[in-house]
Amino acid sequence: MDKVNCPNCGTLLAKETLRCTNCKYPLRVKSAGGIVKIKSPNALRLRNWCVIDIDHHRLLYSGTERVAEFYIAEPTIIYIVNNSAEIAEKIISKREYQYLPNLRRKVRPGKLYALSYKPTADGKGHHTIDEVDAIYV
Image (tube, rainbow, N blue to C red):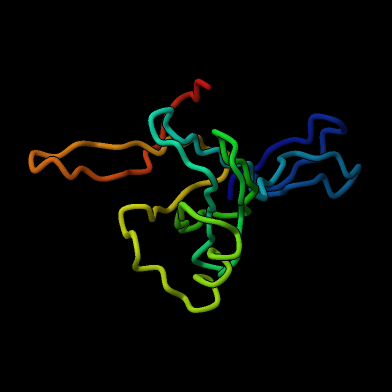
């Protein structure tokens, strides 16, 4: 087992220790989650859009802003709906997540995503949710 010294009092501790057993100094901050942001593309004029947490069957975001922002504690499978919160709540209650399978994705706390439209050869195209390094509004 790896050992480390507490930077505050010098006590020798196991590397996995979150707080010094002697002086209670925090050695590591355990991440409990984070904010996720998803940007809607400028070309996609959404009147109202919702983000549903499929894992826990709850509404994470509902609104008209270009960037949806919500908190999750762990990686979560989300589903994006271009509709009102009332419709999203009906989808949640009936577990009807098959409507737009390409708008489903596992997202991770603290990450940024962009909703984008990708044209296809047949002219129909499809939407995707991609992880990005930055969001420009």
